[in-house]
Amino acid sequence: MTTNPISTTATALPLAPGHWTLDPYHSSVGFTIRHLGISKVRGRFGQLEAELSVGATTEECTVTASIAMDSIDTGRSDRDKHVLAADMLDVRSRPTMAFRSTRIRRDGTDWVMEGELTIGGVSRPVMFDVDFGGVAPPEAFDGHRHAGFEATGEIRRSEFGLGFGAGDALLGDVVKIQLDVQFVESE
Image (cartoon, rainbow, N blue to C red; front, top):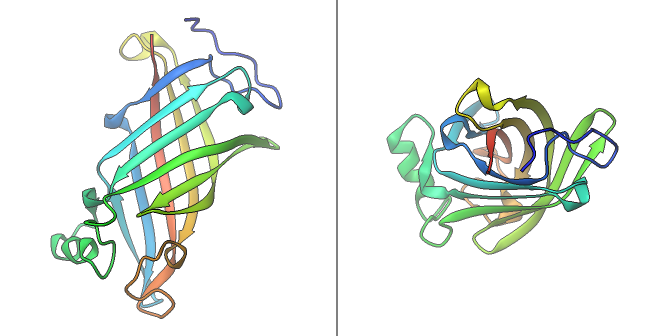
């Protein structure tokens, strides 16, 4: 596989076509939600799997990801236990959150990734603003090219049937999501 990036055009990504796998040691998924309308609670998910398939143009690119819902970490184990319970995330019936892209496009100098997020059998369209951090050459780390991305977006809990306070002042309906991911080019 070539290690030279393709040129950036209106429909091309600045990455060589091919399969890229997630570097889990240099990737994270964080979230923020309002509590009582006066402050934010932040957390993260510790188990993320993702793949990036790069084609010659953005129309030929796809991203898939899966998050283990029980890997939530809000910094308080008692709160995490409650969040995992049936009245909130209900991880017994919603063990994973899955994403698949449907479109990757440029918006001026920015990137936008549209896709479908599925939580517990409920699928909804989502959109992420993507910041491409660049590509590290093979000699920079482990003999492989690494590509970095930051993606931000938001979902509404009520659209996925995630209860406990949806629609009232206890917990906000909007959950802001931030992904910092690094992919490694496959040989």
